[in-house]
Length: 345
Image (cartoon, rainbow, N blue to C red; front, side, top):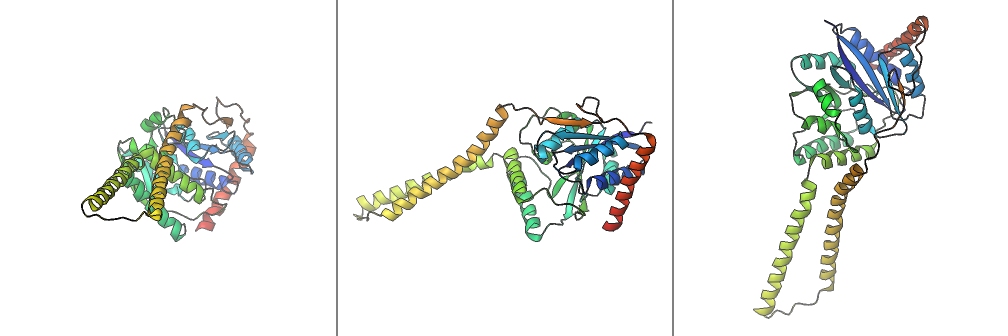
């Protein structure tokens, strides 16, 4: 039987210090898997350093490597969705370029896939973030799972294997603000997780600051839950009931007991401010949903591809290197990966 092709999806943005290391680690992993072949799809989110030049060199060395470079930074989730749609393999494995999710676990994921599971995802047993960030992540996973109408796995990141059946479904997705880990989880099928320890970043800086994590959290909640909208209705019911009870108490005291209530300017002002605050807060929540409907209705073009390498349909394609130069290039990548492995150990 011919080896099965596995599409390895690697999003990159200003990762010149890691891209060769990631390529070497992935190819070394598949050297020990004779029943599988791989295609590596790098989605370059319009890097401004030397990342794209390095990817060009790798593409000329290895025709299994494909590169999709966007005309601007389209965001992490949208770049990933483009990679999923471009995958040609029998399954795909998503992995970050910084190798915090070790490629050495790919054989374990493939074994579970061959057992009949359409999705195999990694569960982060430990995190390399500081305590506050790690705690925030744990709380977010539990909050979104509690709010969501779909069953979302706890402590699961982006490290996952997806079957061809789901890849075909993702081709039909047209979403301007996708949340892929939730979208894939909501599709059903047989999904299984495995625990692993996330490694520390060896080189480069994280491209996922607090602001990006908060934005991802908002996308996750709004894409998979209507509870924030329902909170507005519940709050209006509670406030309305409390107002009626206060009015009833005022009338009873005034008419039956002859109470002469003082004209409380401070109380009236406080109630007005509370009412305005509640209105503004829940109009903001509704606005978030309406904003997403507006963006979706504009039908903006999908992320514009500036260049594609090693793809017959791409607008640009580099000619392959001669055999001797190709071997030297692959050797350089392999030696880079070996040095990285020794440093990590």
